[in-house]
Length: 364
Image (tube, rainbow, N blue to C red; front, side, top):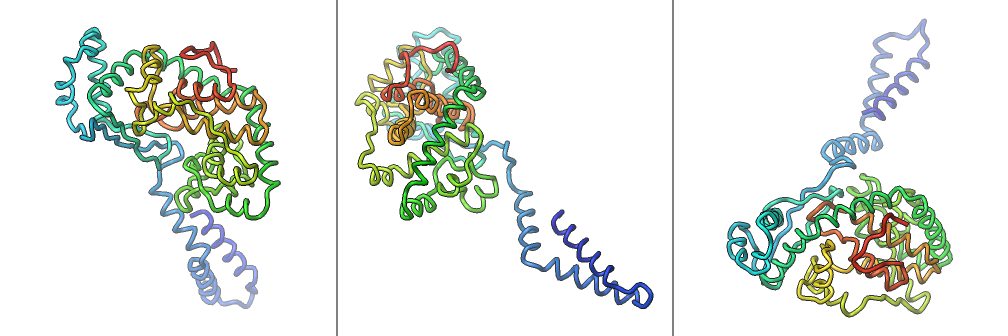
């Protein structure tokens, strides 16, 4: 290990410098140097570094992905065999109305959901399961997945442009200044609470060592040493909103989350949207991708934004940033990430510009 080697080199050099060249016996000097090296090897600092290196050799890199196996259930029964499930649902009118190529795609999606391991860009990620009340819900989800493929590609392009948007980054930075001012103005009990709380997304603003050894940065630590990248900023804001909302409410007297009855109804089915809800069926008819239902995280972020006096442009930047994070960084294809409509339809409750079921030409 480099740290241990450098420490050993310094101790060896010190021993040689202290030895009178004309009178010192070589064997005595060698024994002295060896003793110092052994002392260094046994020091708590070096032992800690060596242990850290051993652990590091077993860890995924920051660019690794977690393999997370989701479970698909229908009416509370796990679907363990995609072929058996497909045989049961393939004669449904919604399925037979698709052409042969699209039916093949739907069957492939089902196989992926049931049998294939999804991946997440967080190597510490866990799965988020698909739960359907009945076969009709599963069928509608499969048909919707096929019908939204082209729009999903559009969302990927928008997310990529969001990550490189100087406009969004700039407004996100000015919002972080406001949040920091609010946080720093609070008393010791509030800051103690922040220092004791860790959020679900803290992997994205913690080092890998902090994530594995200490569960990631606390909110207090992250506010004192803030991330500089878009993912780090928006996930810190999200965790702050989710974990500190009761503390913020106690300070300002209000925490007004704005989600419609239709949006709430679409969330009543585990991690995926409720296919029986009008909100979901309207979105399916528009061929927009759905995955995790209307985003309550977006609502919490924008409630926090309203509390600290965010501008309209900052609200827009927050919504687009969390969409880009969900689309490009949180997880890949089947691991439960929110899609564009699931974020922006909620953000519209807070005045963020959004034409329902439509896509702008580019990120703002």
